[in-house]
Image (cartoon, rainbow, N blue to C red; front, side, top):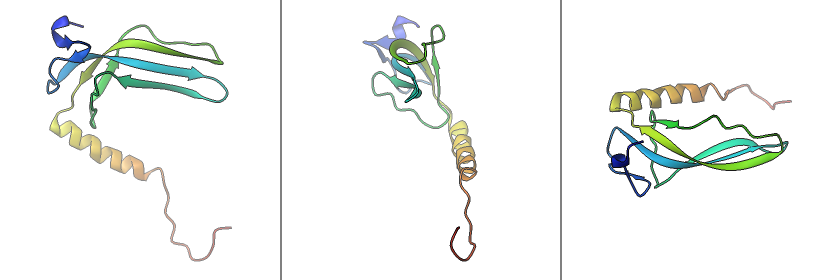
Length: 108
């Protein structure tokens, strides 16, 4: 991560196709919760097709624990064609998640 790409932990250019910034990773592995959330610093908005690469060693925590990590990330912006293709693909993949039935009567 070059220092010229960062200004106070924020991307030097928000319109750049690729830039580095920081993130906070919250991980929990328990019987109640199993998640890993990544929050980018500096209110970086992500759009369809954008890629985020988190740098550093793989995170592993024991069962029943939670932890918070600070890491560097590289955000690569999608171009207009990739963004459009991602939106179209997401629309069709979403339709696979539900089923619509027009059968008369009640479901038993």
